[in-house]
Length: 130
Image (tube, rainbow, N blue to C red):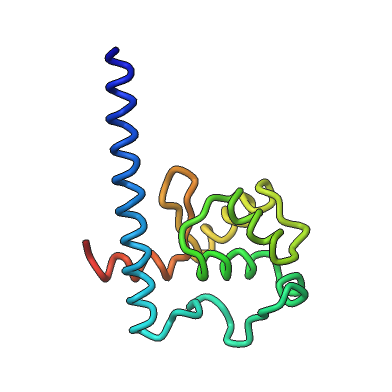
């Protein structure tokens, strides 16, 4: 039953990783509030707030805004979140292409394992330290 023990150990490690990620997200939120960047540093001040407005901004800006507001997300999570706010052009394939473009422009960073954040979030995390 070594496999069962290994699975239990991996599940415990995953739970610990999730808890650490949540703690980091809270730390980032606090830092963003203190620094006055909670509305997202990569988003214009007149950012849309209604479903119709979400649909009116370029897809790249919508992706950056979503990551600014919600933190680390996968392409599939981004697509679902954008669909929920009225973006019907958001599929995980489209979002993957947008993320690649935004990475090349230095606006987003990959955390690995399919998770993406804005470049500004990465800078705040590094500045805050462990």
